[in-house]
Image (cartoon, rainbow, N blue to C red; front, side):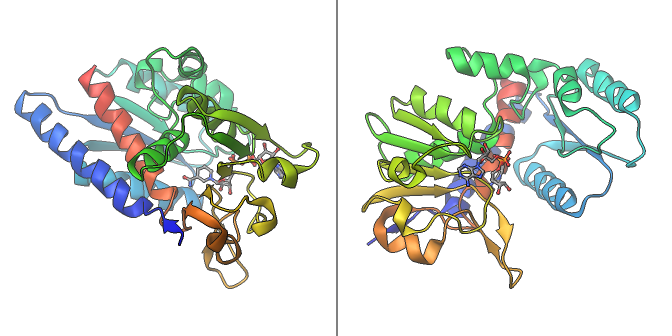
Length: 279
Ligand code: NAD
């Protein structure tokens, strides 16, 4: 029978561990604060931001909210980031993506001081991860490593196939699985024979952003399947990139959507904030 990897439970464990750490840091006089910057009122972004603030409150991190209008210019946003960079009370800076079209995401990401880059998107953080130096790890792939480890899934020596090569999920996922001594393959929209490659996987990570795309014909019997996708189906129900009902019976372990990878992303963001304060 397939093990359902419970991201809600594992993320709660991590948040509880962090809550204890934060209480100890407070006893020693260290307060932690995260700047949460949202430009505009995109409904999905508002949900993410609300959840991040809630997690901060639970753990004992102060969230300093900058909810600024859609019409904010790039220079105005950069000025806020600069203030946060200089403010010694702020340990982490989160700019909720996507940004409005008139603001260049890369410029904004590069403006965040690497020592406060708790999303792990700054080129310096990415470079450090690539060569195995200390730095913040991007939250979704780091959360997946935690899910695997805390569910007893061994990575070393395993065939790991990732479908998707984005800078925030696919590519860093590959690097982190490699760091754990997995044998890693990245697939993308130009990959030939996707099914054949996917079927080699002992650990298959689906991060292609296509609802229920992965059915049982992509999955080796007994594989571990991690579903990163988040979508709403025709009935407005949340679903992932994996057709869970068809795939689950063929796996040894699988993450559901919701309740799999999603909650881990926020838990790892909180982890990065605490790490920043510890430094
Ligand atoms: P993206 O659109 O930036 O990247 C998708 C990648 O998949 C691309 O590299 C593309 O080459 C590849 N791809 C697309 N179609 C393909 C196909 N038919 N065959 C093979 N490869 C294909 O997406 P992203 O930002 O990496 O996000 C992926 C999914 O994960 C989305 O559904 C997103 O909403 C979700 N997501 C979830 C979390 C979370 O916390 N759970 C975090 C980030 C992203």
